[in-house]
Image 1 (tube, helix red, strand yellow):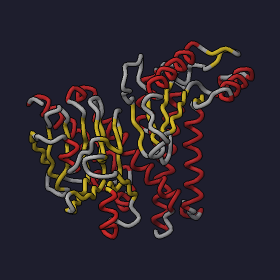
Image 2 (cartoon, rainbow, N blue to C red):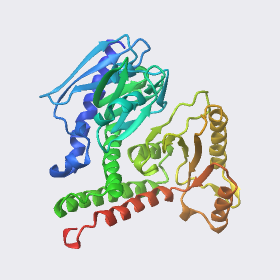
Image 3 (cartoon, one colour):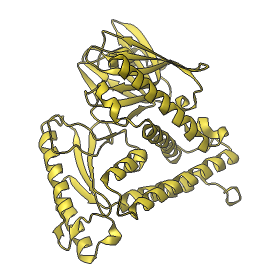
Image 4 (cartoon, rainbow, N blue to C red):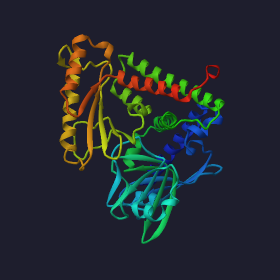
Length: 397
């Protein structure tokens, strides 16, 4: 990485954190630490940019509290993944191929460590095991990908020695040619809302019973406003016939949580291992072995014209077929891959077209076709479950 690209990356990182500092002001001060990861609240930090011989680049915060942002650059002979995690396997648990991806709040460890030092692992943490150093490691970032590591811990053993590291925030890039495509403001918004709604999902699944009524009320009011904002933004774009697919790609990148609440990972435009006419718009990893690849088409494009597929749907189905041909050769034993196409709005379909949609889905094996109403339904479902779970008294709403 040359000096010019070094400066470009530093500018991206600074703009990203400046935007975050503005976004967090939407959340009442007294509940920010409950709902947002610590790195979003930093007033300063010390960090380093690692540049490895393969052209991969890793930004890592190594001191979380400082009076200002400090970013240094260092070349390393190790792969960036090894520099940050201390280990790189020949194969890895997570292989990142897309953009706008986060690995958040997990504990990455190996079986040897668990067998000998299980009592040292944080209680109630989400623990993911790789097998053994040198064979299977934690992560690998591909040439065209980028990923953020947020609040993760790495616990491993090698030669009977115990190693522990906490990664508060790191941002890895497959190469510096991607810098020109990065919108630090969209990244900040995507990560901000993803973190907020991930906290909401935790509320729904785990509850906030240990907090008092006043705190629950503030949390409730915050999320009501946010969910209404999300719903309004989608509806506003749905009503605009001028909005193209790129607009909706950005909209779903900003609010990707609603593609799959509780997903392990959501990637934007992942790269498949062979050239195709177009990349999937999103890859959702539901668990260690279950994946969904998603193609989006604008809401104003109908999936069917009468009983026949529209030209836009035909193109989307063709693209999915191309992905299947590639992925069928890459799927590991025990892995499950699904496909989804999002296109059109239900209100624009007549009776014949709605029946044709149902018949289309009934005839598919691992492909489902939905309209954009499906995304709004996810928003409504989360709102309903939130209202039930928080159980806020009417006089506190």
